[in-house]
Each structure stands twice: as C-alpha cells, then as structure tokens.
Length: 441
Image 1 (tube, rainbow, N blue to C red):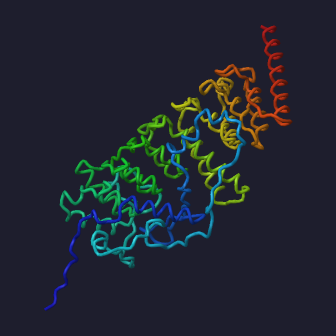
Image 2 (image 1 turned 90 degrees about the horizontal axis):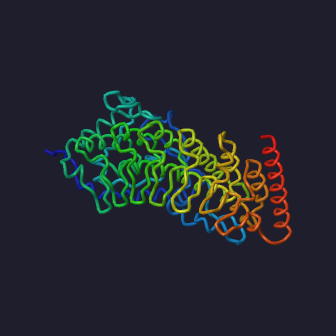
Image 3 (image 1 turned 135 degrees about the vertical axis):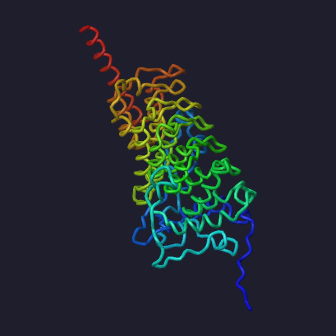
C-alpha cells in the first residue's frame, strides 16, 4: 500500500534573504518606468494598482554628502543630475507575488507557504476585530490563507520561528519582503507572543522597516496594529518615517502618520536629518532628474508629485518648518534653494507663517537662502528664485560669516551684473520702506 508522505520541513534560514529580495526589487524598478504591486491575496477584481517609487535614488543619509552648505557656495556651473534607464514598458499585472519578489519556490518554500487554492470555496474576508487592534489598511485579507499560515507556524518550534539567517532575517522579514501579507501577519502574531516582533536584521531593520522599504502599506498597518515599534531605527538612525519620506511613499506615510502621537516627527537620523529634510532632499533629486530629461518622463513626473505630497503630509501632520538639520543647520528652505528646486520653493513660501521674514532670513552656518540663491550660477531659474525670496522678505543686506553680501556671490558677466543690480535696487527699496515705517512710529 502506498502512503502519501508530507515533504520534510527544512530550516527557514535557507529561504531567499531579504537583501536578495530587495535587490531584485530595485533591479526591476530600475528597468521599468512603472512597477505595479498587485494584491495577491484577494480576488482579481479587487486588485489595486500601486506604482513603486524609483528606488535607485540615494538614501537620505547617503544623499546628505552632496548637501553640505559649502557646496552651495561654489562658483561651479549648475548642472542637473543625470539619470538613465528610467523608463520602459510597464510590467504586466497578475504575477504570483508582488512585482520585485518573484522568487522561484522550492520544496521547502512550498511547505512553509502552501500553494493557495483560489477555488470558489475560498472565502475572502477582512481581518476580524479580534485579530487586529485596528482595521486593516487597503486590501482585504484572505482568511483561509491566514489560517493555513497559522497552522504551519503552530508546528514550528521556538528556534525555527525566532531563528535568523546569515543576514539576521527572520521568517517575518522574508514574508514581509515578499509581500506575503497573510504569512507575515501569522509570523508577526507568533513573534509578538515571543517578544521578538522587533527583531533586527544585519542592517538594523525590523520587519516594519522592511515593509516600508518594500512599499507594503497593508503589512505596515498590520505590524503596527500588532504593536511593532513605530520609532525603531536602522543602523543609519532612519525610522519608518525617514524611509517613507526618502522613497516618496505617500500611502506608507499615511499609515504611519495615522498613528500620531506615537510617531516622532522630529526624530533625527545619524546624519542629523528629520523626515521632513529627507522628503525635501528626495524631491530635489527627482526634480533635477526630471529637468535633465526635458520634463518628458512620466515616471519621474509621478515620482515628483508623490514626493511633494510627502512634504505636504509631514507639514500638515505638524512637522516643524523651522527645523534645522544638524550638520549645516539648513532648513527645508535652504535645501530647496540650494538645489534650485523652484516647485518646492513655491510651495514652502506659500505656507502661511506669522514670522515669514524670520523664516526666509534664517542662517545656515552664516548663509541665508538668498546667499545660496546667489550661488546658483548657470541655473536658468536663478533670477526667479531670487525674486521669489525677495518678495517674501529676504534681506539682501544681511552678511554671512565672511562679511559677504549675497551680491558678492553672484557670477561674473552680464547675467551676474543684472542680478546684482536687482539686489541693490531691492535693498534700497527696503531701506526706504524701513525709514518710512520708523517715521510713522
């Protein structure tokens, strides 16, 4: 008589590491203009299209090296950043797991994650209130798959569930990176009971931070509802909010900001940046790439919109507009001006601020935003930026630590002379207005 034999369970550490999964995601996104995340745990008629952001852009801490205040005072010609391979045909919908995590399944994975039966008997249900402290975000969860995952995890011993591979990844990290929501939820339940929900891999990322990096808002919500530390940081000091701001992920940010006041809006990473600074830098990087390709790339246009929305969401949630990063004391206004980001500048200066002149004239190591605008040599929007700052109260008579006026930092030649005349004319007008006000008093 022949008996069916269950496949032998193998150690979870042989699963694809989170590092490999995220590398595949970055590679796919670099080669595709729009990458879509599909709902693999629900019916096809409930699929939701979600474009991933361009992941090849530098991380916040990595980008800060190009944002030193001295760079803004160089006389080199302004040149937009070049990027390539930013657009091609979209990847079709309908893959077996979120695009970017399409890893072949071997016997051990099939045992840990049994093939789902999408028959008519399957029941698609949202999480029951008893299974999560908050309503799930966005997609509905496949309750039958969740029960399968719970059953498999119940058979695992302690070392299997809490074990970490050579990169420090637990099974929760791996399920999260693959976008397997039900399996991630079941694993998170077990690790929560064992006090290991916030276990960190080799780069200090908890499963929550992996979920943010993988752009999985539903899993982010699930982990937060189970008690994941919303302010946990990786080895660069970056929290979930830093990562969402840097990658321009408004849906992720929406989930995180809905957990106020638990989330710390002003936490600084090890480069001294708040999430607001990260969002501003990231928007500038995308804007320069868009300018470099002649404003014709639809993917970059969408990224720019998403990243600007992240700036808006942070400010609407209460992030401090006057906050200065540690290394060079720059505010988001300095960061926008330094990179010639006229769109971000227009938005920041449209925000109602009681003491707008104080904001516009704040110094970063002695330099006002007007000093930085004077250094945008070769930038076609330099004059517009100068006029915009002046219209909002920028004072051209303020000197930097070297006793220099903004006019002293302008480029040589006819363009520089024209802008110097503009600053002198505005400075004279400001003095006349100040004298008139004093006489009235």
